[in-house]
Each structure stands twice: as C-alpha cells, then as structure tokens.
Image 1 (cartoon, helix red, strand yellow):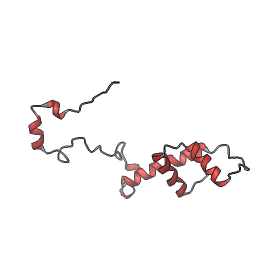
Image 2 (cartoon, helix red, strand yellow):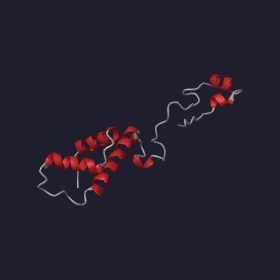
Image 3 (cartoon, one colour):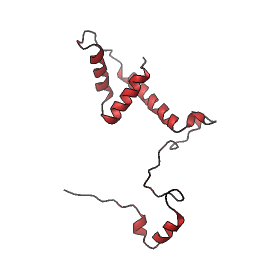
Image 4 (tube, one colour):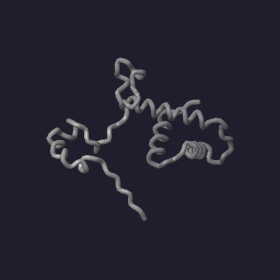
Length: 120
C-alpha cells in the first residue's frame, strides 16, 4: 500500500480545514477516479491509510521541530519537546520582565489565570 505526497498533503489540509474523515476522503478519491463505480473498492484500505497519515504527521512535526538536524536524530527527541508554547502564557524573560512581576506581587489575582463560564 502506498500514497503519493500530494495525496498525503491534500488529505492533511482537508482534514485540518474541512474536518473530513479518512473514510470520506477515500470515497471522494474513488469517485474522482471511477465515477461510475464499475470497480469495487479495496476492502482493507483504512488501517493502512490511517497509519500512513500518522507517520506523515509525525514526520512533519519532527521536521518543524528541527530534529532531523540534531546529532542524536529523531531518537533524541524527548516527550513534549516538539510542543508549541502557548503565546499568552507568561514566561519569565521571554514575554514578562522581572519588573512587571514586582507590581503583581501584591495583587495575586491579576497574575493568576481565571476562567469564566457563561450559562444560558
């Protein structure tokens, strides 16, 4: 079983933007190639396609995390190392200076995150 990079890119984009499942995507491809339905669809395609997509997404994540250029390679990636930091979170010396924290010492409620739940 194989898939072209174009199919993997296309499915990745469609599933992120259009929320299309692998089942629906495969049947759309089948209609594009054989609109009359003369040839039966392969029976055991979904596990292979889903596995290819998991590998594709993992490789894209490793590529974006620059693990391919590391001396230890992919095996050197630690759990959570490829996670993207949430920008609004205060990180000392990155987006919050020590002088900003001095003013917040007295008022802890301003520095702590809060959650609002709206009820109907």
